[in-house]
Each structure stands twice: as structure tokens, then as C-alpha cells.
Image (cartoon, rainbow over all chains, first blue to last red):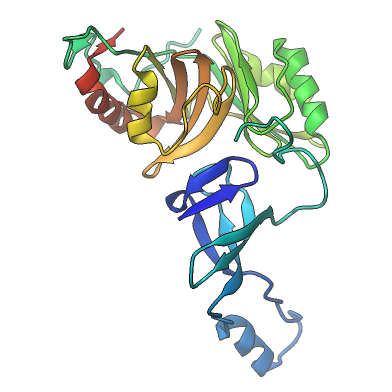
Length: 98
Length: 195
């Protein structure tokens, strides 16, 4: 499986570290809602299809990425920096190295 | 000046080795730069850091993924968004950069003691490196001056193309001897010379 890092380009999955499902919301640390914490720690979507997940390019630029991967086909439909905030630096532009 | 000791010394075998029927396909050497410095820009300060690198070294690092530039004695290239490896054969680069990059702009980390710089030079350099790294080492994918951050198994390596058939590799000093031996084995089929 190849993941195309927004900075480094396509790299083998062995360069990446999986960091779990993206988009989980940590409950308010002051909360003692047992059900909310239980869900946060243990519940996962585990979909058969498109899945939004966190990866780190630990064997390359070390950026944290949000990857949308199809769990049935391993097709990766999008990769973005987690800190993405519309800045242009570090993104591949026209003429950038592929 | 301090006299640096090489971690490769116990396995350092100068001379020509391997299959030399077609001559030495690659020349392997250690460039021993006295300054290896990592510079990181805080988000939004990338251009200020690139300007500081230029002021300190005279190297104009292009603003783009993996962009870099190399001269006979100095080199700089992007290794991650807003992060650069800057190298000088002379001592003093870390202090020079520290004087130009304040804590609000970015951070400067001296790695001179922590990395070993290995040069792979010769017509078979791409062939040998392609055995170790899943990277396109072609001239169009990796033009002269530009660099990549990758790994061979768990040995992280930052690689800069410093010539048409020449690559400089920066690997962890503590793993450099093991990596060097793997590199030598990989070069045996094309013949290699250690200088």
C-alpha cells in the first residue's frame, strides 16, 4: 500500500505509523460521564468502506496526516496534514518534485 | 579544532572491493562535515528561516518540498514542512544560525555529533541506493540539490543529491556502522571503492 504524503510524495506504508481513527472527540476532561469516556476509549466505527484515519509519516518528514482509506479496497482517496490551515508552504505546487 | 572520531573506523576498509570486472561502480566515502544543523520554522515563519539560512551560509534554498542546494563545502535541503538540514564542512554554523533565528521564528538543533555523513558517488549510485530505499532516485524525480527524508528499515536517512551521480546520506551516528556495512554489501555486485 502506498500513501502519498503531501510533502514527500508516494511512499510505502512501512514508512508510516498508524495512529487510529480520526475525528474522535475527547470528552471534557472535567467530565465524569462514564459512558462518554467508555465510548471515547473503546468505541470505533470499523466501517466496511471509507474510513478517516490518522497516520504519521514517521519514516520520512514525520508529519501527522489525515488519510481517507477504503477498508475494503485499500484505495486512499485523500491525504492531508492534520494541521492544515491553508498555508502554501510544504504543499506540492506546480512543478514540485513528484 | 576538535578531532572527530568516526563510528565507521572499526569496519573502514579503504580500497576496491566486490565485483570489479566493470571497474568500481560507486565510490563510498565519509564527508565528515564539522557542522550538521537542523532548522525548524514555526508555521508562518518559513520564509524568514529560509532567508536566515541564506544570510548565514549564502545558500538560497528553494521554497518547495525537498528543495535544496549544495556547494563543495555547504549544503541545505528541506526534510519536512518548514524543516531544513543545513551542513557545513567548517565549524560554527550552529552558532551562526542561532544568532539569526530567534525563538519566535524557529528552532536550531545541532546534530554534528548525532549524524554521520556518507557519500555515494558513481555511475551505479542510483542502482545501489534503490536496493535500500523505496525512492525514485531518477534525475527528474530527485533533481540535483534536492533531498528526501526516508528510512532503510528503522534507520532514518536524509538523502541529498549533490551531483548527477552523487548522493550524500545523513544517518544516525549510532546506527551508521551497521548501515555502512549494509551499504557495502549492496555495492558488491557493481564493485565499490572506499576512499
